[in-house]
Amino acid sequence: MKYFSQFAIILFVSVLGELCAMALPLPIPACIYGMVLMFMALCFKIIKLEQVDDAGKFMIEVLPVMFTPPAVGLIALWDVISPIWPQLLVIIVITTAVVMVVTGHVAQFMLRHEQKPDVHKLWQHIRHPNSFHGLSH
Amino acid sequence: MIRDWMTHSAFFGLLLTIVAFEIGLLLKRKFHWSIFNAPFMSIVIVIAVLLICDIDYETYDSSAHYLSYFITPATVCFAIPLYKQIVLLKKHLRAIIVAIMSGVLASMLTVFGLSLVFGFNHQLYVTLLPKSITTAVGMEISEMFGGYATVTIVAICITGVLGNTFAETACRIFRIHDPVARGLSIGTCSHASGTTRAMMMGEIEGAMSSLAVVVACVFTVLVVSFLANLI
Image 1 (cartoon, one colour):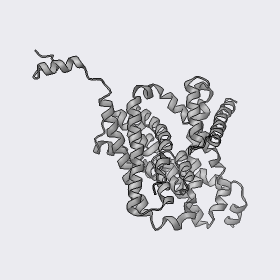
Image 2 (spheres, rainbow over the protein chains, first blue to last red):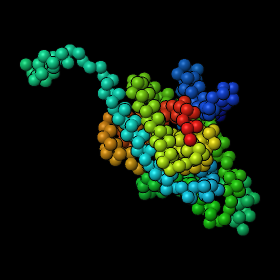
Image 3 (cartoon, rainbow over the protein chains, first blue to last red):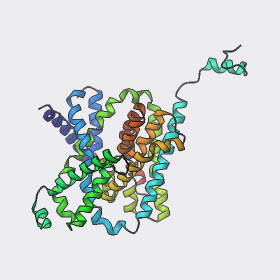
Image 4 (cartoon, chains in turn purple, red):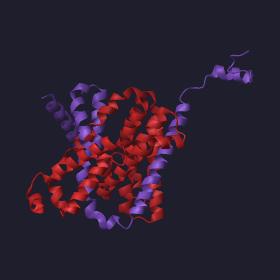
């Protein structure tokens, strides 16, 4: 019965998310409020990891199959899509590549500057430009 | 005959969907080609069956739509794997925020630019706007601003197939060498499907990618309303 109580907790957080979506006039879907609430509840130990972990794993595992029924609705939209599908495909491919390059390189730049430069080593390097970090006098 | 049977059965659509998904998983295990991505294949198989048997979408959806009923609680569960990565999240907080935010903005601005080039209307533009993020949230955003949620799901699936197929090669070509940066870029550009590939590339890549999937959709939700009404 552990799945049952775990599922109840997940549903409770989802309902709270729905309440937020109804009460706040922001264009944010209920699932995002729910996700943020769940994350905060875990961080502040209001909900313990063991209280939702198994049911959560199961839900995430079965999530992909839930999108098949709405996606099959494509056949009802064929008149809209058929004249423009090459353009759609071009946008999808180019955007995916752009996002990858931008995110990857910004991340690499940020990570390189994350380690604070070692002032002492830098000073040694300036004083003895030919020595490797002042190690080979 | 099959038609009558299907129209009157309360479970056929549900059964068809799950069987199609299983076939997708089976093909993937057998052939290891990225095109045999289970979500993508299940859509193709179900559409093929409906067309061959001449069954209309409403008939199928009347029983299959119960599956989609649990999308919101399942999406809420994404907080759990994110919480498990909290150590990594804290360690690289600045890099994660800046990199994913740039990726999210790059995604939406590229869609905006190309939609202008192709002369798309508002409905098509907002349909593609959330195409890099995870399906549950992307679908909601598309619906919220009046797009075709159906097309958004398919666009997101294709993005996932691309990420799953080319992530490793693309990292090499675009010179993304750092494992943290690789994970972040794969998760931001191709959500959960890309993450499967990132997990095969390495532990850090997989963890960063799954973290990026969640953070990217939160960031997208935060900024999408500023961009959604440009076209």
